Amino acid sequence: MTTQTQQSEALFRNRNRSVARAFYRQLRGEGFTHQQIIELSTTLLDFVTEDLKERVEPSK
Image (cartoon, rainbow, N blue to C red):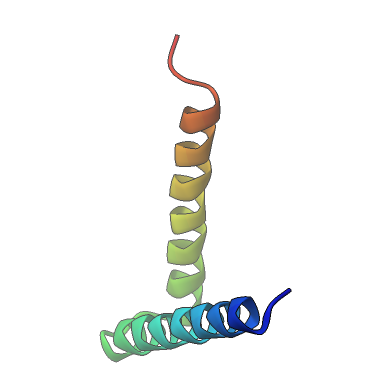
């Protein structure tokens, strides 16, 4: 793996962490409970899973 690739991956991880932290703080600031944030996260993962399935298995 090249140094440039490693740097790009590190930047990507840091960006994701920063976006997630900001989103989490926004939700907490709006009064979401920890449980509600977990449920929201699960729903987001469900949407991603559905989207990936549709790409692999197009509608018949």
